[in-house]
Image (cartoon, rainbow, N blue to C red):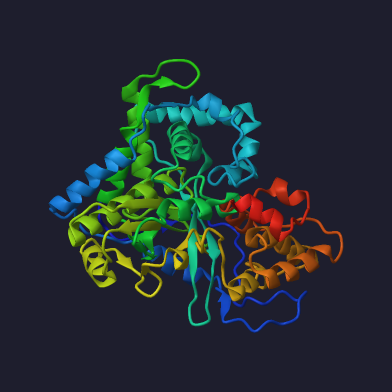
Length: 475
């Protein structure tokens, strides 16, 4: 099915999913006139989103692209190749996946979370049997992903939602054998993937200190990065990642047959590219390009692809390496010795079916004004606009049924703002102090907090650090 647009592959039983044809402001706060709103979620919007997974371009024959790929091998090279984690050991790892949905077929068998699988020896035996058969080279069909959804805060004229690919737990556990050690190695290396640059732990100060000696900066905003990455680029990214894996030795004990392990990873890579997904009303689709969210490899593969694209652009258009570059999925910050042209970059990327949003992409000599990981860098003090904060507070993804939900978001956003916007800090602190409350946060909200370096454990203390205390954390 290589290089085909999204293919419809039939009908099977669906699953229950709430959609909202209108999104209301929280009823527990005075009405706020916002320039933004929370996107509406409908089944047709989810279907439209899935249909954007289409890129039929071939790899161009371009020496500058070849050079960028060679540079990526060098940039992502790990001093020691990582050892795999044995499948049995995955189940005793402390991971944030255990509280999440197990996907198909598990949710139809009464398992509510991946943790339920971990606690059931019979379920583990089934996972091991599946993986064993894949390693042995059997033609075994993987389960479908489930089309969950995420709605975004966006301009009033837009309706920005995206399908989230609810991966089957069996595939996730198999991916973890390879992806977990890689992620941990890049978290240690902190380059070129911006691990350790989370805003809540002083990440913007680190970015500022690292980039302030340069003159020209760009931060590219891709239009639908994940949906448009061509399959040849994903394969290249996997090859680069594979060159850093020791396919023979397990982390703690034991030796593997490299042929079987490579077979397993090839199967997972194929599923990553030719992923099948099932919508709530039971329609099945298969993509053949683009990056599915929900995989253990999403962040790694996206980061490698982004690095290659940014480096290709500077060589092709400026004839030099970037002076420095940090990537995190589709997010990037690039320093160059002369300014980049967004029009030229758009024309170049269009040749491989990818596009940048010229309105949101930035080219500047002022590092402070750049946005990275969702915040303006400033002089190391990360900030967002007041209106953006208020919309995140007042427009929940699903309607608030208790004031505890508003107070919980206020607490999370109090930490995310870190005392930078004084007015917003005051509003959120007042809400938190209003009355005792249970912390009730949506999965997506929790995920976004983790993205900036804030854990649920910190929130459970319910402490409200002062702006000065936050400032110490940010230095």
